[in-house]
Structure formats: structure tokens, C-alpha cells
Image (tube, rainbow, N blue to C red; front, side):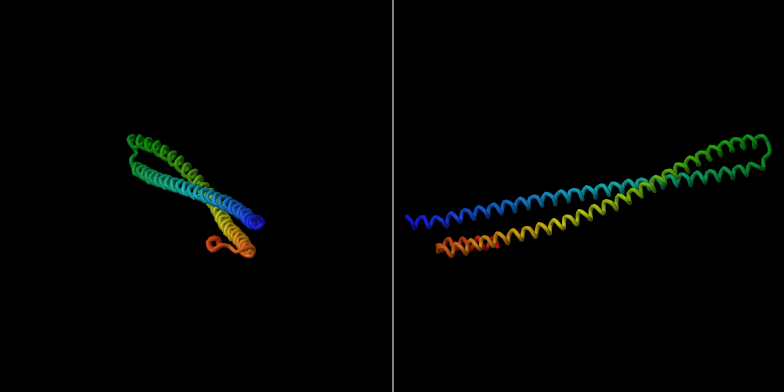
Length: 207
């Protein structure tokens, strides 16, 4: 009876140490899962920032296209105004009633064209100011987003390094505990060849 009780004590110690190893693995898995979730969240945020920057680029491109259209309209009105002035000079040679009527009509048309040109130029200047402001805001946004992306990238890199360090440290601790337990078991009693082979395989898989 005394020899059987002595044989049961190492088995009980082995069970307690095995439970500690399982607890260590559970904590390690929790740390790995937490870091994995943080990495996924950071990656999702970076993708959202990139999509927002692409949208800003599209808005700026549309504003540039509108600006080009306004420039073309202004150029056309300038040509028309020059042509009307030339017509006015040609009609100056005719002093009859027909000339005066045409001159009156021409002046009215010129006044309308000048008013339109003034409106178009004002609109053009407002659009140009708006585009300049949008470009400045886009540049500030891009700089801010670039800084955020760089910060997130640095954070991800630090998290990966920390994760690797923690994982290596945990594996080293587990390996040392297993080796210490194995040394103690081998010193306390002679294991059967089958148990020795299992112990060596488990130690090699965690090393």
C-alpha cells in the first residue's frame, strides 16, 4: 500500500503542472486574440482613410473641370465683345437713321454682354476661390491622414514586435517549466519507454 501511494504522488504533481501549462496557453491565446483584433481594427481604419482621400481627389478634379468650363465661357464672351465693338466701329461711318438705330441696338447688346461678362467673371473668381480653398483643405486633410496612417503603421509595427516578444517570452517560460518538470520526474522515478517518448515529443513540440 505504501509503494502505491508513493507512485500516485508524482501523477498528482504532473496533473497540477499540466493544469498550469494549460492556463498559460489560455492566457497566451487571449493575448494573441486581443492583438489580432487590434491589428484588424487598425487595418480597417487605414482603408477607410484611403477611400476618403480618393473621394477628395475626385471632388478636386470636378472643381478643376468646372473651372476650365468657366474659362472657356469667359474667352468666348471676350471674343463676342471684341466682335461687337468692331461692328460698332464699322457702323460709325454711316450717319443716317439706320445707323443710329443699329447703333442703339448694338449698344444695348454690348451692355447685356458686358453685364453677362461681369457675372461670369464674378462667378469664375468665386469658383477659383472655392477651388483654392478646397485644395488647401484637401492638402491639410491629406497631411492629417498621412500622419494618422504613419502613426497607425508605427503602432501596428510596435504591436507586432510586442506580440512577438511576448510570444517568445511565454514559449520560453513554458519550455523551461516543462523541462524542469521533466527533469524532476526523471529524477523522482524511472518513466516507462513509452512515457519517455511522449515526454520528449511534447518537449520538442513546445521548444
